[in-house]
Image 1 (cartoon, rainbow, N blue to C red):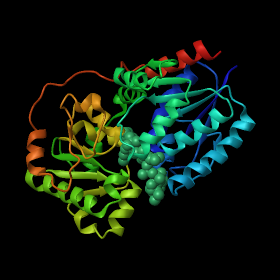
Image 2: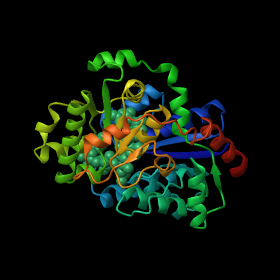
Image 3: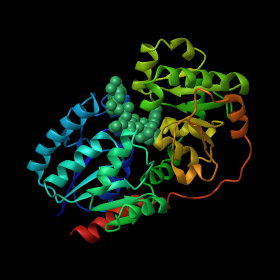
Image 4: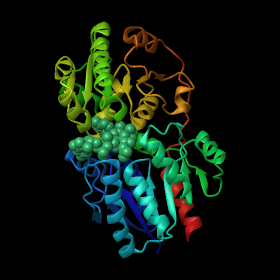
Length: 361
Ligand code: UD1
Ligand code: UDP
């Protein structure tokens, strides 16, 4: 039986692994060895997802933790190499665009082990995003490139990558659909004292927003403006990176009129998403989830998923220091027809497993 080593380490990767892992187990497709780099380690950034999404306990935990890009990537690189040398897999699976992804792909390439990259092909063409560097490099050394959309396939082709490319749709969309029966918006709203359509859901954690005092202050002031001018609550589950810098920059006063919580679980977040008025985010995953829930969002970033922003459904607002938040919110609240399905049919994980089985044996 073929052996696959799957490497995860950060919150978005647990979510993607949950779906693929389930498909592998259901089809008894191969021996699946799960490795956790330890890039994310707080219970609400890691363990909670394993519990609620039923992901099996990792076979190896590398304990990489936090650090500079170099320190984090290098530690994962060294420790994951040991795992590959002992496990001797037929294939390595990596997800998305984190430092864990790059380390895993680089190790596998140097040991001549074929690589499957899930979520291959998104491009911002902006190297200021560490994620752009990670995904471009990973794509160029991968053997199987599983893309979420047709545009991602085209992006790869522009860089000469055509072999091993499959447009499977997005595994996160699979999970979103699969988890619908488990959502409980009423209970979650009650927990936070919220009412249907009476709140905005914010997730803001990316380095370009939270590591600059000027930008982060503008973003938090913007959230306060939204709360006041729209007479809504703003619920902001805060990533530990954002919580730390808000404190360090002395911005705590700007949090007191918002509902601030620790990061919430996947089912909680998806439940809350169903009944919110709109989203405010810089998350790659959450902007897609907003789209699937037919909620519009303000994206506080230079580029988002172009497939969505091109339709005008989400508004791309990078100039957070000069943004007229009231005007933008009014624009966002205008009715518009839903542009329709972009991220596949909800069977991406099955397709990935099938393609690997058909080609890698
Ligand atoms: C990483 C990804 C980013 C993704 C995000 C998802 C890279 C380059 N970036 O960013 O693409 O959007 O994960 O959530 O890989 N921290 C804790 N506890 C934790 C994890 C992090 O306190 O469990 C704090 C530490 O202070 C750490 C900081 O958050 O230094 C940043 O964590 P890190 O993993 O370096 O990057 P993310 O911002 O999470
Ligand atoms: N998420 C969650 N709770 C939170 C914030 C995020 O469950 O408090 C989930 C959500 O499904 C999101 C995913 O984690 O799509 C990825 O998160 P994140 O925004 O951290 O990473 P990115 O998608 O930007 O890489």
